[in-house]
Image (cartoon, rainbow over all chains, first blue to last red; front, side):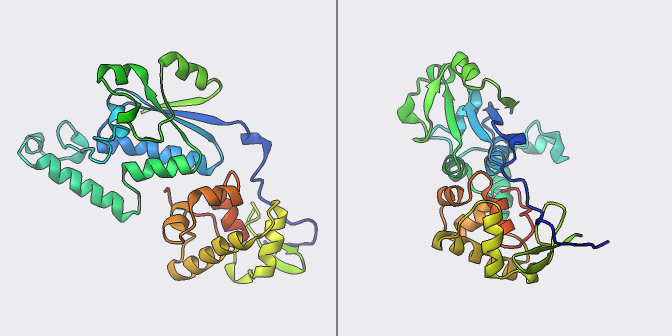
Length: 171
Length: 104
């Protein structure tokens, strides 16, 4: 079904007003390697679509922006029935290290960056990173302990103000 | 698929306006496509577009933004400046290629 059309060409509506002003906030509350990725991947995709993105790291999610841990998140078989393996195996010495390195390899094979580099890419794409005040206080951490692109340590109230009108995704 | 004429080029496009036959593309057409979406081509734009074409020829897939940065060597920040808001899609459109399918 082809028709010849000499009227104006079809132009993709890249800058249509429909999505204008869209804003998404991701709350990252987990520090496991496998749970770090959903937020990073979605935030990156949203930025590529021209959406304003804020990432708020809280509780265990703090490990994603703590300089000491961000490059060394782990993946464990323990308690993860989705691996379809006997649960007892996960508790054996060395199993977490093995599972972590296997997962890291699968991720790298798909050219998906590790957590620190992924955060760098998100910031380069215009994303905003925020740390949770309570989590920082609980762990006696200051801005110096955190990934340098984190814009600030903010309270829960600040976060609510910041995300006025945003879609919020809790991970 | 509709056939349309742009700047004297007869091209096959999909419903969004992306070329469906990458061989119908040339650099003259790229200038016209870029103009359609408000982009004026500079040397920077050309190096990105030429990388997309080359990579597509070699790999058979439109590179993602990350690949343009890591393999093509053009920083992501610059891509967002040259092709604002939706750089991966805009580059693919100007390069006459399908939208990238990769997640990252």
